[in-house]
Amino acid sequence: PPETLPSGTFARVFDAWFKASEFARPGLAATFFVGTILAFARRRWGIVAIACIVLANVLGAAWMMTPLDRFAVPLLPLMIIVAASALVRSPRAAGEMAIAPVTR
Image (tube, rainbow, N blue to C red; front, side):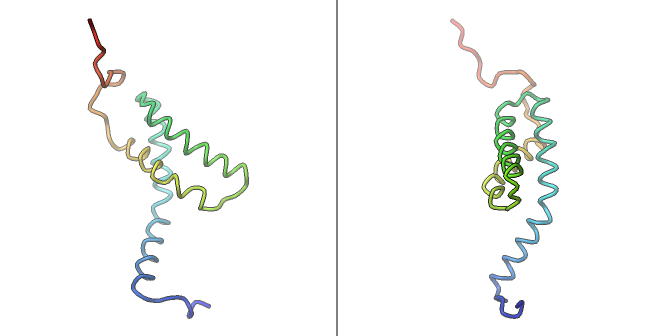
């Protein structure tokens, strides 16, 4: 019964964090997909590789027909990296090398 659940400060803080994360997840998912598409367009292959790891996990969990959150939670930091890459434009031009080639 709900009246037997903890109602202290920590429970209220946890509940607020939980509700905030549940509210933000659709936006994170949408930004993740935008970040994946932009990473392909910008040829940022490291970000594309991270996105492929996350997508493989999502498809694998869907294939197993297990919509449990425990499969997605460990990859939330990777999703945030891909989503943040959509919001940040690298100062380097597309195709420019980060490290100058060694010439002799």
